[in-house]
Amino acid sequence: MYSNFKKRLYDIVFEADTPAGKAFDIALLIAILLSILVVMLESVKEINAKYGHILVTLEWAITFFFTIEYFLRIYIVKKPTTYIFSFFGVIDLLSVLPTYIGLMIAGMNGLIVIRALRLLRIFRILKLSRYVSESKVIISALKASRTKISVFLYTVIMLVIIIGTIMYLVEGEASGFTSIPHGIYWAIVTLTTVGYGDIAPITPIGQLIASFVMILGYAIIAVPTGIVTSELTMASKNKQVSTQVCPNCLHEDHDPKAIYCNICGTKLNE
Image 1 (cartoon, rainbow, N blue to C red):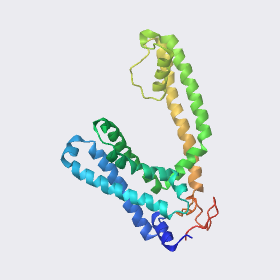
Image 2: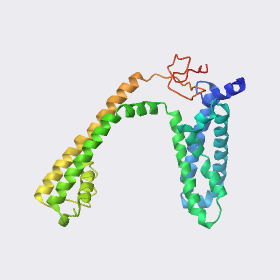
Image 3: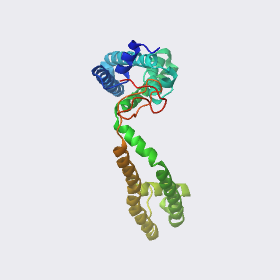
Image 4: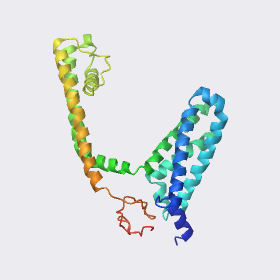
């Protein structure tokens, strides 16, 4: 049976429409931002040398808080495995593992590994996406436009291969186009208007082609922007959801008037 105690905890941890739930979310947001700041400050040698002990203390306090949060979420959900293997479940686990693994690995040979593991704590920033409701609109728009974007990328890839090959034939090794891959690299850099300048055409024909590619680059940049913007407009019009999270399958994005989960049929917490 799903006890009243677990239900109250669920409302605090998973929901954001109660004072206690909002307070918990704010505390979690502060801990996430603070942990990211600690990771950044640890990478500055001067700060780490002077305040390293304070940063370590803060890190362990934050890790302890995230650990409690992780196991609390496992305890209160009806199906723990659903949460553990969900996107946010994996992110929550990654937010605490590096610190504990770094503590267990000892010895000079493991210092590089420890450093790499500790840097994984920066992925705590992904926990913020749980509180950015508009990110779901962006994800929905990207999913809706993935076919159009795929066709667009295929066209661009074919285009840079053709342009890179032509430039290799026109310019040759004297201009730095020593191979077709080098020509393709130049085409990508020019088409995206990055323009590193490490390879440049010197012949009149090559410069004419380069001018065409530069102008074409502006048109190409506008295409995916228009596709995604169109889908964003449609998604924002249709996106009216509540903050309710299904206690059974952890599905979100329910209709504001929904009483039951539209995925598994479980009654939503009121």
